[in-house]
Amino acid sequence: MAPKFLHIFDSAYYSQNVASAHEMLWITRVPETLLEARAIVELSDDSISWVELDNGYKTSAIESNYGDVLQKWLLIFSQKGLVISPKDMTAK
Image (cartoon, rainbow, N blue to C red; front, side):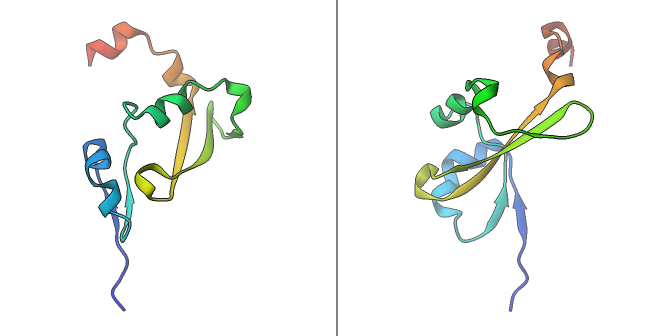
């Protein structure tokens, strides 16, 4: 039996290849340009089932069937990321 590999791609891979990638294990950042992803990010905090972690992080697992491929998306919130000013974002 061949070993299973976890492929890691950038978000550009996602939209172009999600339908053909169902035969392998892969992880990527879902682009927020997808309507489904944008809708999830815009949900109120109370409507998301969060799991609280240390250091101001929390996560929520969400199932999606984007591109007719059943997927597990992980929404990650960081308190530190929330307070970064636009000036800090453009400086990098």
